[in-house]
Length: 266
Image (cartoon, rainbow, N blue to C red; front, side, top):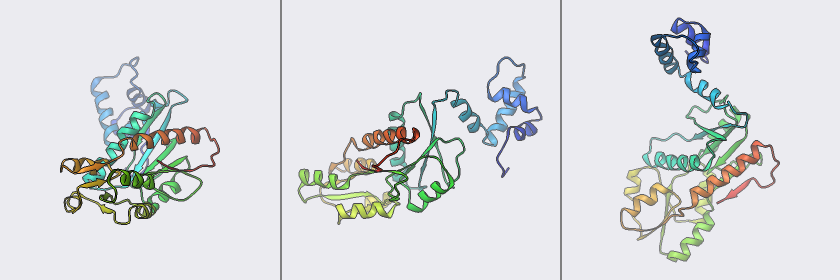
């Protein structure tokens, strides 16, 4: 099915009424439905990916509960995948589970009907614009700089990281990080670390010829070099601080509170 799947589509495929499908997906125990029918309907719901919509509906049983969609740039790299997973873990630990539900979305960038707001994490400018053009809900850019006052933008403070690196290592260090999809982030990094090294996969990381002191803003890079007996400067509080800032911005934007400051460096 290419069109949006409805409860009537599920009912037709299962050979039951739409009411029966509704009873099953809403776990109505007051209705007499055979286990065979229940299993068939749930199987079809799963095949046609209808369950998330029902799940989102159930999540909204409390009026103040908000669903937040999360987009990121697609990548087959284990490093990018690990970094995104670490971000998601920090985000889920920061957002109160009784107030927010997180929906992980993948490309193609499309309209997310259920979402109250969207977080675009580590995307290119083109991807960010595609997300913004498809959705008319509050959108927060994380590690992407669209330079648009309509959106909150939250990034690493690379100048602060450079100052900390100089305090700890002097000039004897190498800055290494995952290559950002956003060219504006690349420029920010190059201004702070002119000789910084961008890597995009494990083989590139293995080939880094560096000094004994490593500075990075990426958890995966830090973990790799720690296992090679390098001295590593990675701000452990960085992701938690970003997620705290995201939550604060999210609460403001969902309440439609006007904001003058839209760019935060953490």
